[in-house]
Length: 112
Length: 108
View 1 (cartoon, rainbow over the protein chains, first blue to last red):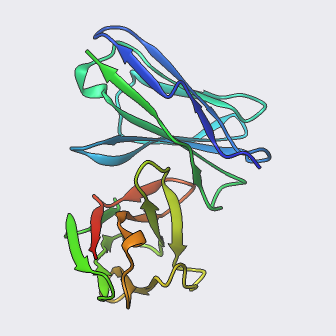
View 2: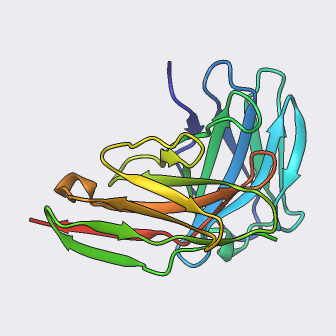
């Protein structure tokens, strides 16, 4: 089975712009979670989706949003980018809630 | 709220020596605890979870609810164990709360 894939792998944006990141889960997996990884804050939970419904949300401003499609693919959007949004954004998928999560390679976002 | 603490940012050991990575957590309920590992230029992957009580790549971890700890141990470190290790807690749903990570460097 192919692993979790994330596109794009690298992205450079400027302050004020908005960005959309995509995550394709492992085939058959219905749960997708997103995490932000930075040197200062480490790995922080953004949100979790199951069957197109957001089940849980981390402590991030409303500029961060996401959604899940009927084929379980997920996107996250960050509007009005700030320098501090520069990070590695990781997606993880699992068969269902409370199952083992498998991580993608991440999208590295640089905001200038 | 849950919290995971890994007190050591860097652990340097010689090949063949024992290695122990500390993990302490705070959570009022019954959490699930995990260790994830990230080798150089690879994605984050699950090493082990406390409910399976299995040994992976020679690593073991025991959940001590009294001390709220989930330390990771290996009796004889190998060079290929050099990596970043993260302890994580899952309280509800799929949300993982991660510790800050410990970089392990195994010297020849």
